[in-house]
Length: 106
Image (cartoon, rainbow, N blue to C red; front, side, top):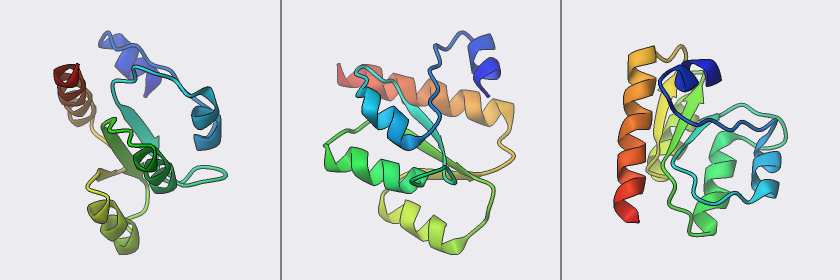
């Protein structure tokens, strides 16, 4: 996914886990692509942590499981959830739109 997005000219930073991402406390993030099933905490747990900090960064949660409980929780958090495999066009379009939203907030 990193190579794909970089091939479209996007700057990509990746992290080994949600906790690793949170410990870096990066600023000026355009959007986040988050796998739901990660070590230590899920993608939705990460999103809840970000929203508790009043972080409005657009987040796309990606999952390999079509679990209704995950979909319901994502809907309550008002976040987009997509199932793997994610199509190249769909992914690039989402990132492009998310970056436009983020740029509009500046």
